[in-house]
Image 1 (cartoon, one colour):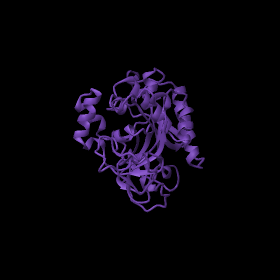
Image 2 (cartoon, helix red, strand yellow):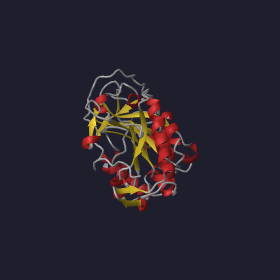
Image 3 (tube, one colour):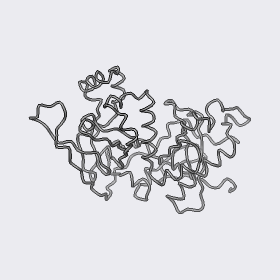
Image 4 (spheres, one colour):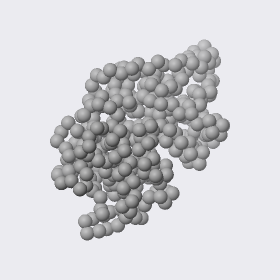
Length: 326
């Protein structure tokens, strides 16, 4: 059966409310007594270690053209390609107080000793086109999932399924390697990141609790096919997003070629069993964050984004009434 397709949009969320919240101030672990490599020793400053619960400024590596050129030359990478890779990577030079407004939080750090030994230099982290980096990215993204997300994703039985909580415009999660200076100083952990723009005091852990403001959650008014913040009238809520790129590539879930035209419009020719597994994943997550018994988790696929422009295959989890209810 065709699935509901919401309005073609970028899934807009609610406006960011910069509300004061009580959060724990994470201790910034200062280490690496040596300064930045390449200095003359006169202006050396200690590097800050990447650690869970630390917060950072919005400075990115891509703002330093000289550094990009040098790294590109050392790695044998085209400078423009290096610039693209580093454009959004945090520089991790300016730690900030997590209790104050901040744009970037490291909510977890990941170690991958089996792959680190293959990273011969920071240049390896610029070669995003090579199998080593793609494997590293998959491993880190899976490790960055909180246990509640990982358990829910596993219910689908689809390979490599990634799950993130639903976030409004201006908020997203990602991962990043240490900065070139941190890498040169021996840091070999990878940061799981929570971004918020404009800067605010929300912490990633808040997203899974009632501390996350209602106005920042995204709900749906089905009658008008509109996304609204959950402080307004609604009948469904977007709770999570699944990423099925690996499953589609492996042939475990249908891709673009499975889109068909039917009496009620386009639909994805996926079996009822496949959809049931996705619904089970969405419901598992819903039960972990809510005590409601009136709603269940429903997986929806917007075919306008199958695949999306970046090659991803997003599936939205919604909290909705059971299909057999009026």
